[in-house]
Length: 80
Image (tube, rainbow, N blue to C red):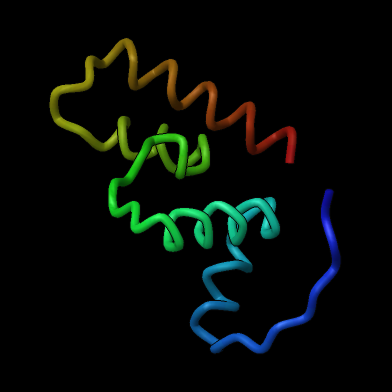
């Protein structure tokens, strides 16, 4: 169950949230991780576009996979 709450946040936090597609989910996940002292970062914590862009920028990614990533990013951009 979810409830609507209002909180004051610093401007830098608001800027971070503005880049998230699902702000509520992002905040919930961050608060749960903080409350359980989880410092590990999981690939599931990042948006698909960011993961694809990071993989594309790696030197050890094949040219074939990079082409597929470009195609997927183009498709995701067209869907937005």
